[in-house]
Image 1 (cartoon, rainbow, N blue to C red):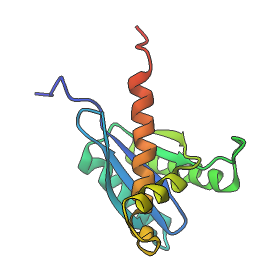
Image 2 (cartoon, rainbow, N blue to C red; image 1 turned 120 degrees about the horizontal axis):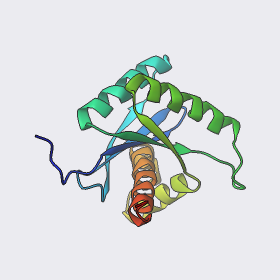
Image 3 (tube, rainbow, N blue to C red; image 1 turned 30 degrees about the vertical axis):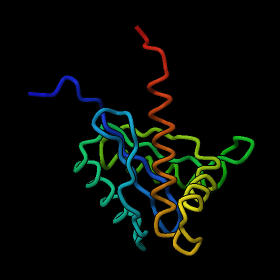
Image 4 (tube, rainbow, N blue to C red; image 1 turned 180 degrees about the horizontal axis):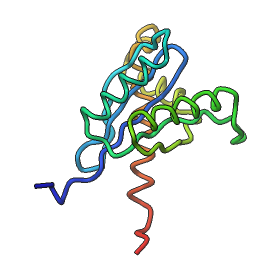
Length: 150
C-alpha cells in the first residue's frame, strides 16, 4: 500500500567532463542530501546506466540536471552537451528531466567547503556532490514555494 504522505523524490546531477556530482531529496521532499561523485568513464553509456540504477535505487520521480548557462542566461556549448546527456538519461531511466540553472553553484560549493575548513586540494573529491546538493535544494525550494495550481 503506497504511503500517501510520501513526496516524490528527485535525483540531482552536477555533470562535468570528469565527474558527476549526485544528490537526492529526502522522503519528505524538503532537503537535498549528497550521495556520491561518479568518476566519468570513457563510454558515456556506462555513466548513463550507473545513473539509471541510482534512480531505481532511490525510487525517484524525476532527475534535476544542472544547466550551465552563460552569465547572461544563454545556452553554452557545454550546456548543449549536458542537455543531450540529460535527454539520453531521461529516455533510459524513463523519468522526467528538469534542467535547472546552475550558474554560480560550483563557486558556492567551493565557498561552503572553504568555510567548513576543507583545504582547496580536497575539494575535488566532494565539490561536485555539494554543487548537486545546491542545485537540488534550489529546485526543491522553488517547488515548495510555488502556489498550488488548484
